[in-house]
Amino acid sequence: MIPYIDPIFENVGKGLCIICNTPINTKGHMTCSQDCHEKFIIFGEKKFGVTKKVIDIETGISYRVPTRDIIEKGLTYQDLSKYPLCNDEQQKQNDWKDML
Ligand SMILES: [Zn+2]
Image 1 (cartoon, rainbow, N blue to C red):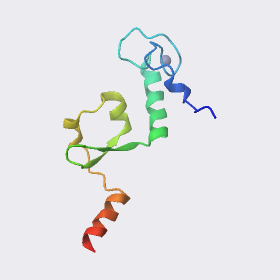
Image 2: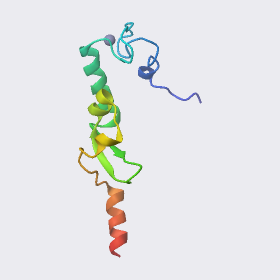
Image 3: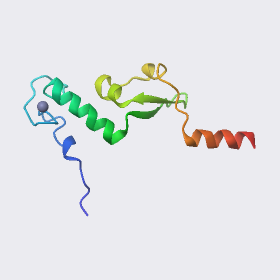
Image 4: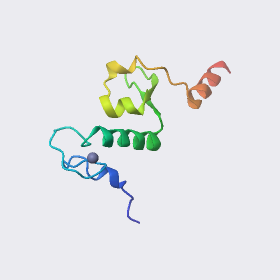
């Protein structure tokens, strides 16, 4: 079986808008316009969720980061601490183990 590659990512790095295929002149941009940018954010939120769990590898602490921020700003580890902590199910299970 051929692995399915989401068509939206095939244009990344080819100088074309990943939403509408319009050639982009601005380096480092993935979309051609604010309109396409918003469509891309919505696509990302549908695909990854409105927020995404990001783990700081150095501290092991996980944070809930809006997908929009990841797409628009990119993330550095210094940025992580300003986001709310992520208390997911796995974390709760670990807490339980510590108590038992
Ligand atoms: Zn476009």
